[in-house]
Length: 200
Image (cartoon, rainbow, N blue to C red; front, side):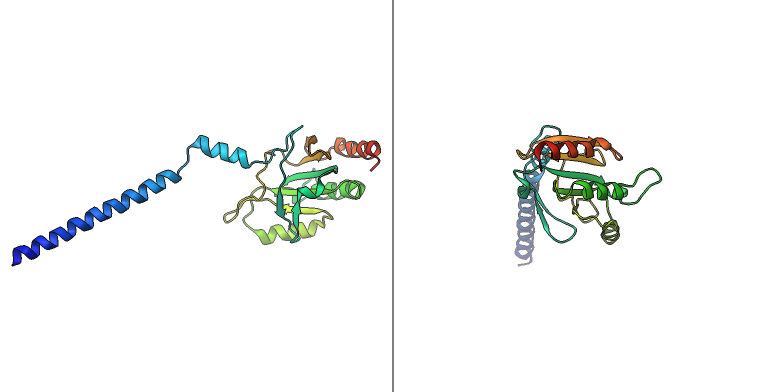
């Protein structure tokens, strides 16, 4: 009688072990399917990336703005419009550069003719402080928090690595100007010429 109980107990242990092995194999296989190669990850990143390089035609994108509204690039189809990219660190004036003053002046001069939007890139681990800085800047045009942080990913996957960057997109959706750096007069001269030529 004791022998049969021991045999039954051993059989149960074997069945349980086999069941565990099958479960682990299924889990391992499903996880293996989810893992991507580096090439696949790069290809996926590029497929989702919006190209703002010279002569490119960036695909449409939308994102929530810092004022709670939703920006959609489709709204600018058939128009010239400008997009700025800057690192959040530029919200603080330095001894040599004041991005807030520059962008506010550019918008004051041309914003009634050329719609403008800005994407704030970089790393941010304090959203409240970032909001305070944006509010303090008193921008009169749309700002999109595109920063990355411990609990957030950037909203717009762009290929802009220079900061600050200033881009003009024409009515056909093509990038006709892509400039880098602050205190550049060329951007404002281009907008002036554009308004004159197009009689905007």
